[in-house]
Image 1: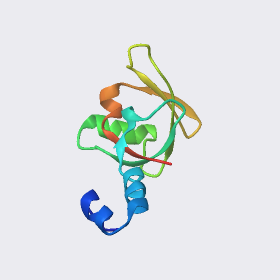
Image 2: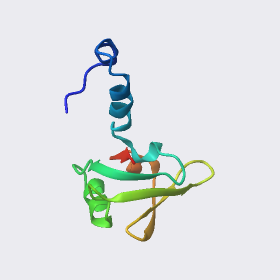
Image 3: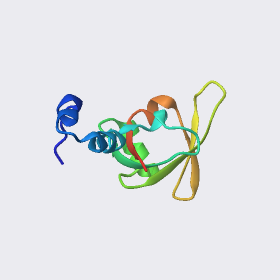
Image 4: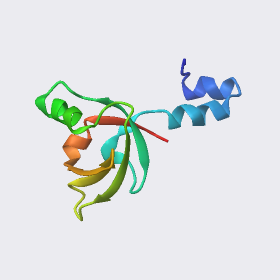
Length: 100
C-alpha cells in the first residue's frame, strides 16, 4: 500500500484514506492506553534485551493488552498469551504495535 502525504491525499479527495493510514501506523507499546489491545508488528531484537523479549512471547502477530501502569508510569503490566508480564518503559519502547 502506497501512502501519500496528507496534503496530496486531501487534494485527491481521500479524507477517509487519511484516517485509515493514521490508524495503521505502528506506535510504541509504551504509548498505548490502559485496557487497549494491540498487535505486535516488530521487536528491536538487535540487543540481548530484544532477544529476551522474543523469548518471553513478544512475537510479531501476538495480541497484547495493557493491564495497568505503576503510579509513576514504570513498570507497565501487559497481558499476552494468557500471561501477565511487567516491562520497563524502555523495554516497551523497543516493541512496535498496531492498534486494533
